[in-house]
Amino acid sequence: MPPAVVTLNVTEDQHCLLIQSPSSGLSLQGNLKVPGDKSISHRALMLGAIAQGETQIQGLLLGEDPRSTASCFRAMGAEISQLNTELVTVRGIGLGQLQEPLDVLNAGNSGTTLRLMLGILASHPGRFFTVTGDSSLRSRPMSRVVKPLQQMGANIWGRKDSALAPLAIQGQQLKPIHYHSPIASAQVKSCILLAGLMVQGETTVTEPALSRDHSERMLQAFGAKLNINQETNSVTVTGLAQLQGQTVIVPGDISSAAFWLVAGAIVRGSELLIENVGVNPTRTGVLEALELMGADIRLENERLVAGEPVADLRVRYGPLKGCEIAGDLIPRLIDEIPILAAAAVFAEGTTVIRDAAELRVKESDRIAVMATQLNRMGARVTELPDGLEITGGTPLVGTDVNSHTDHRIAMSLAVAALNATGTTTIHGAEAAAISYPDFTTTLQQLCG
Ligand code: S3P
Image (cartoon, rainbow, N blue to C red; front, side):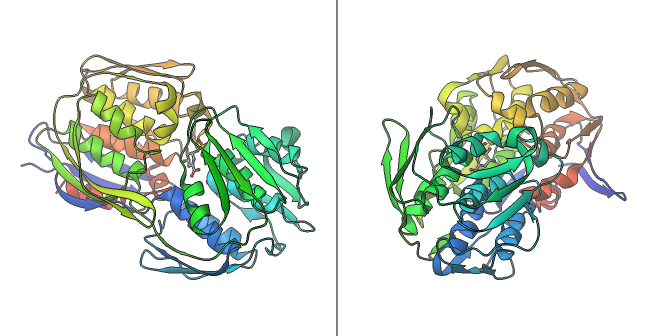
């Protein structure tokens, strides 16, 4: 089997990933593990910091995003041991006890860090905080969390009517609300629930469709008083219950596994087993979408680990067909749309992705960037206001493409390049370190 050549060129300010696939004979084989779930890693650090006692975290993601969360909470007095995948200990300082930081809190590229943290900060009476992020995060909408927090009585200031970071927050005693979120967003839901921990009475969030529920699961495990109404997609937190440190075992991130699921499905002759992947039903939309496309994916060894469902995922190569991805499925696969778009390029027929306008305000405008970059490689992708239309079956030709500093775009283009002729050069490939620091190494190993 001729191997694909995968090289990483590091120049002064940019990493380029060069992928040169053989014209035939490459197949991906073997067992692999993906790094810890990003959403669960953030929440374990945050809840650990505001709980009483010690929290132990096994399998933490060592990506740039959780590092941002750890550094923000360290700056407010939480003792967090050196980050590693084996065991991280967090000595929490108790509800409402965060110290006023001496400097600006920097969330880097991480929307989850900034938006969830805002709920915690706004409800700390008598403390003043300033928060910011990198250039991508400073252009992303914060009003979706600032508005409901203001309804609770929060004092927050920033550019564009407090819609953009940097933001300044004067912590307040907040009041409970029932917030009907116009978007299905776990960041919005979690921000309000975290603020509600510090509010006397009942704070409720209702969302139009169910978004990931890691906050609800972990808050309950830490001892928060939560009431979940599955029929109305509502969650109520009753405030002022103290949280107790816990042991959190972080499963592998299905959003990272998705790259190998698609790689295994599109590279002829492949068979991969991805071990220890979180399969929380609010995250498994990608499995349903790939099933609609006819992919051969099986769940093995299904189990429950520390309150989260986990399985090993086996994928085998097979022909894919176009499908429609829309509606309530979207929040359950929102981060996997770039890699699903890459899969659709190799599927027979047309794939239509709709109801995904949220993609325009992620780490990049993922609708515009995926359409432009895949089309540069010869694909037939049309932008829709709220999604993409992809006509599969056109062979891809390697060329220069750009991640636009977006981790999921960098990795999706790398997977697409495995099935392209010639050499694909991915500029800005270092962005993968946000959620998957070892992505290139694993790709090199798989390509043998
Ligand atoms: C996340 C929620 C999602 C997702 C993001 C992580 C979380 O964002 O895209 O990568 O951990 O809560 P939205 O809440 O904006 O949909």
